[in-house]
Image (cartoon, rainbow, N blue to C red; front, side):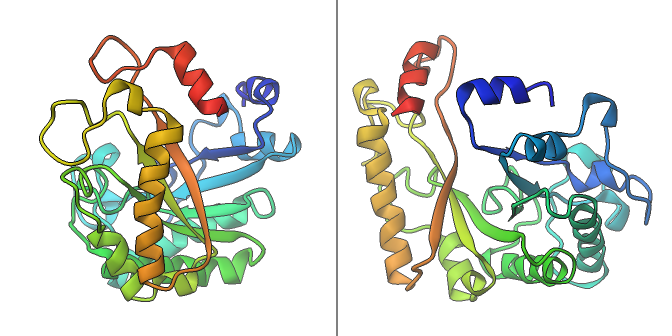
Length: 257
């Protein structure tokens, strides 16, 4: 919560943050917010009249025997594991009732970086439905957001579809959501790379690249008759000296625009 003064200075109106299930439930059935000595971000944001998005995730080794809880990304989609997930959601929703405006289900669930169990978009809908059931019970005023997909890799070679997102929509996931979130990154594609989506450095600007990606996502939503809200809640550029980097002053200008 020491970030709050900086966020106020930036005139930020929303915060997106999380605390993984594996941190909150380290022993079966015992729930506790971790690292309270570092502050309470949802409460601090609430007291500063900021909206708050809480990302619910990820898996928990207690229920399927993994050995690395901090990197565990197997998605609960049925049975005892899914019921245990609902208990995690219930605890967070009860603890922060009225302070968290939007709950987001998982992060980039289509990616192996966050979905080591390889659950598809249809499986993901089971997680959305279970989360919705708990929120309706505990904090019905909170909104539910899902999808949380990026443009990376899926469109790298000029593809115009996103299989995971379309699976989610086909399975009726949007029926349980108040909004769908997307992540757009433009720095992955360099001039000279193979594929139709190669961007030169001058084309990394939000005015050019973001509009291209938004058009692709819009086509997917139109195809699947989704007319609800869409939130962009991750974006950015690499810092540093690599070929993909954008200096901080330029990034600041991009973010303002």
